[in-house]
Length: 212
Image: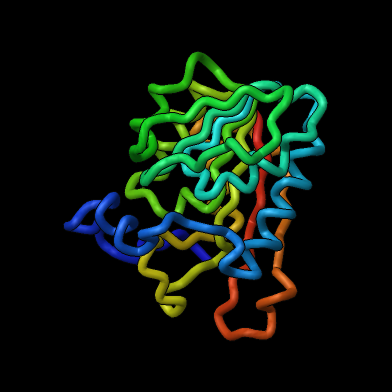
């Protein structure tokens, strides 16, 4: 499948749309396939534990991916942010990792709140939500050495997801990463067991890339 635009930009703006859609904040455990995807994402990232001291996730939702990385031996600094607010971390049992809550806002504008470059930027189920994904990938390249990216594979208008602006295939994302200054290192395709029996169920593409 080639890259397709699924819908026009929202006239009410992103903040208003998501505040109405998730008034109590997004929780990944509301969908069984999201639980599987988060677990697979954490597993992929943990393979790069020797390269990661600092991590930023500025569309972190409930922070499940960052929380899943806390046991990595070199991990020391995390930046957490989201359009409608970063989650609290008081109950995370933090010891070695220092967390920074980034002010509410949209990517890529919130990149300015990072204190220098991070080792890893987490872009989980976010690229398909933004109006200009190519610009976002380029800008993250100025802030991070590694990029973890996940996004649905070959989403079409039939799925009818009102949150997503874009659908694309594996070759599309590979080309977008390269054009934006990233060198793709690894790809895993995940078809969650919990939803594979359902029509229109997502397959996710999980990527790790390094700045070229």
